[in-house]
Length: 295
Image (cartoon, rainbow, N blue to C red; front, side, top):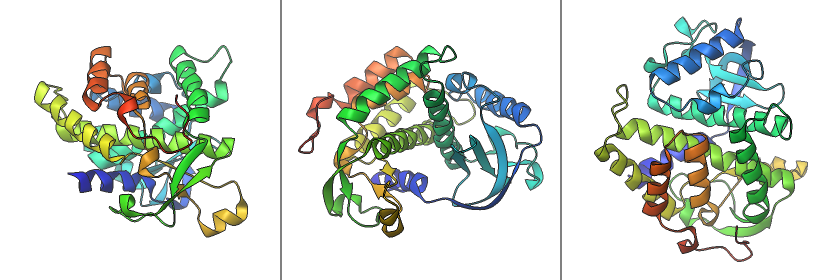
């Protein structure tokens, strides 16, 4: 199970490269169709309905190693053409036909789109309470969790992250923001994939057996520090050597961050959020790297 968890997480962290993309002819209508399909599957949708339909510009393209990519420049969300009807790049296939792993990747990127919007609209009348809370917590955690970190030295090795050499690193504000954004996106994708794997995929029955299976997977990933992100160095020369630096397991997602995302993004009720917090243990039980401030 641990290998499967790490494998799925690393899939989200592959560097995506696309050959081309083209705008969806009716972007806003297709956005509505996508959200409606996700709602019908019982998947999280509140944050998507809070995201203005005109903010994200939908594209279809020939992606490599990914079902979707989000590009903050131009607020472009690019989906693989395989997700369109007959591969024509015009309309989405029915969501129920999309594989669980692809849905997880899509949610990873949809989170990035919402996070982009939250940062874009922060402190404006348009900002919804959920987005304001997410942005405030992100700003707070940026200082106490994503400034002094430990990173994996060298390229990430699939399934061997815990055996890699690590070193401390002080991140710039933009690097820390990037690391936080990616860590949260990885968790959102991880949660969607594991929810789909532990429940009736179409009926979305969230009975106790399914909940326990999800909690066991989450506890294992949390205790092992499997869910972490990466950042792109601001130094251009450093990016040429290593385009992305991955956070070490010691700086994987924390329990308070998990609780925040379960509530604000994943639409879990308060009882489920409390159950998760109790199941994986108090955040102070987790070892901290030297120099990491308490949040």
